[in-house]
Image 1 (cartoon, rainbow, N blue to C red):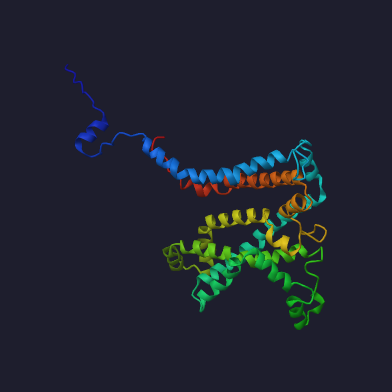
Image 2: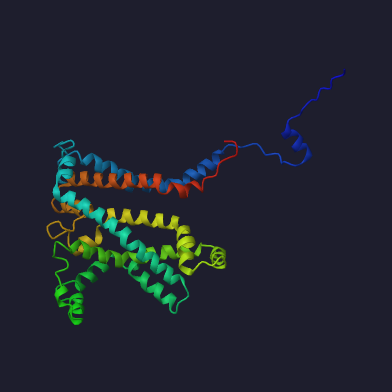
Length: 328
């Protein structure tokens, strides 16, 4: 009985001989010239980042351990006392709550309002270009101009009070920026007027990426316009909504300009935010060590939120952009 032994050759070699799989060129390491070019291109940006971001952060952490007025040497080391003092201050605790409240209101009020107006402006309506310009115009204005404009409108006897009196609602007039019960909500209305245009433009850009074939397929299946919007369009806007929510929350945590110009965080801290509290203590009262501690706390809150949001909310969007090598 004769046995036949078959000598098997590597599949890759057979395929390459047959000309079916191209032979990959050997990898080459990054040349020294390429490394030098990358270093020269990145050096200005890295220098600016270190000078204006890392260095101030390190300095703020260092100053936060001292009781320092901004003048003279750093001699009075207090350790973590500035942090304990800030976290136990009822005004600072209220400022944190105000930031959180504005962030929540942004999601609850601005999100549906921005999305609804974007869907409306994405349709075929007369004067669509003009309406888009009008809703985006407030966002172009600087915070200082917006604050001064609304400061005059909301003054006692100003345009808002006159409008309410003109329609027979004089009883609804208030000292909008002096009433501790409504000042924060008044400021939120101004913030919404200022920043809603950004959300509308962002959602309009997202709507341009929705394939029209999906809408046509839904219409063929008998779906109404509302069903198509709710079950097809809005789910496809998920990444855009998550990006908008991230920017909105970070902006709410760092809110400063409008509130500082309009109320200085008053009356009696009822509209204070972490940023206005920081400026008030650090620069107006010359408590630079204490203000540095507040700065570190504000940065830590924003940094931790950004990490958690990236981990749990934006992960599904970034995973689709990551390509993995086969067999890795």
